[in-house]
Image 1 (cartoon, rainbow, N blue to C red):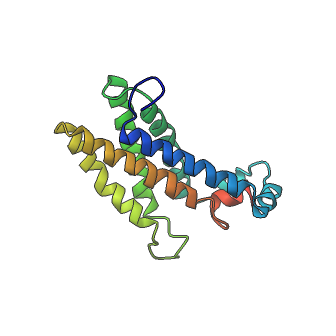
Image 2 (cartoon, helix red, strand yellow; image 1 turned 135 degrees about the horizontal axis):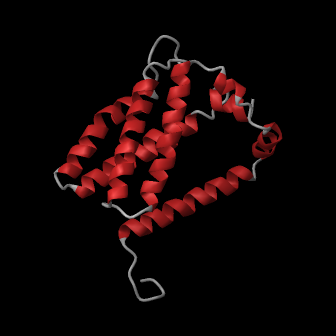
Length: 174
């Protein structure tokens, strides 16, 4: 029970635990010697590398950043409003564009798909399913699908773009 007499739901408890674990991992990572070496590599972003990238990568990056910003707003705001629906459709278009454009990016495994394309397939299948769920009034299924695509398709896949040798690594750290 919380200090104010209210109980904490299981979802809130799991969310709090996840944030705590994430913070502990982040603190441990930042305190490591490798983190100090990484900090020395940080420089002003070299956006000319994005400008020099193929158009499909530019479209992919623009759509992903659009989906990331809109998704964060959607997560923080009240659900079910007209604004939520409008931003939600915009997010679906941005995520769809991100997923489809990624199919044409094969830099990890030249000429072939890589493991990261599994997230693209999941998104391409999941987006219509999540829209169908909300149209049928299945709010919990819609929430799970959309949150999963936001976390898996944007945050986790986005983290991979900062691996050494990838475009965003070179923009910020290369």
